[in-house]
Length: 117
Image (tube, rainbow, N blue to C red; front, side):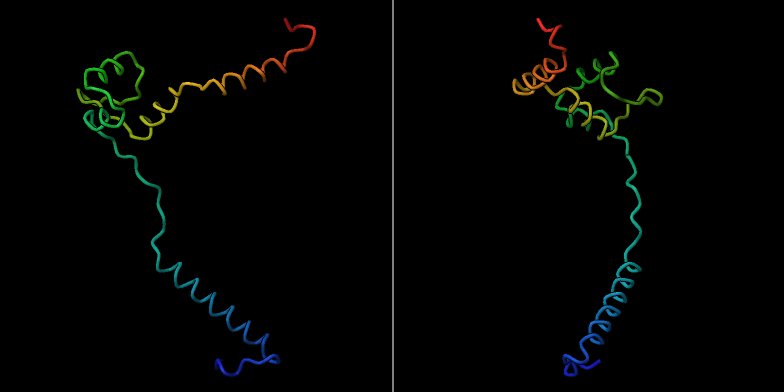
């Protein structure tokens, strides 16, 4: 279709042509891209784990011995996964005063009026 041919009468034809062109471009883009595969979890050593959580090696060994820190052992070597270490850090979050007050208020509202002290 020639660009100069677009008029009110052939507007539906022009729109249909554009839709088909966009569909063709979409197919070309989809074929050109490699399929997205899930990322592999790569184990890391204790040195990298120490840097991620900001602790010294002896402290990490102590946390592992107490079974506080998530880890894997193969032979004498310890392995960690970065996502598990970050989750471990997140789980140790201290609540703010606002969060504590909000929880206390929610618990107070849950109690029946007769049981409130």
